[in-house]
Amino acid sequence: MDANEERAIGQRGFLIRGMDDVVWFRVYDRNHEFVDYEITNYDCEVVIIDPDAALVRNEAGNFLDYTKESMRPVK
Image 1 (cartoon, rainbow, N blue to C red):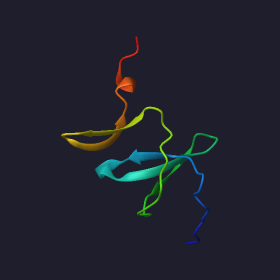
Image 2: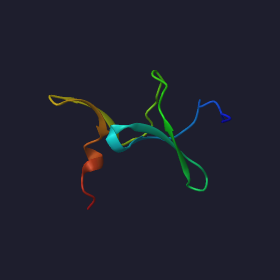
Image 3: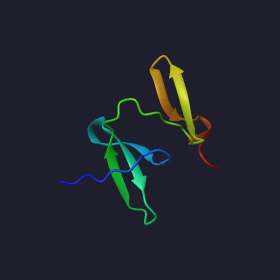
Image 4: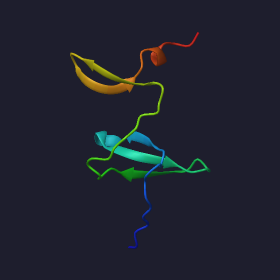
């Protein structure tokens, strides 16, 4: 099988939690089709650009979650 490889630097996508808590990197194209990539790079730097993301630390643990404001019902 031939490999199709391209540099990932600058690529935008989404971290998707799949079945059995496996996390994938999902990339959409112009036609809204996507490719899910299994993450096998163990120390890839990530920049969070989602304004609704928050780093939460509490007695239950440390989480990358939604902000409290983003979880409020829309009136």
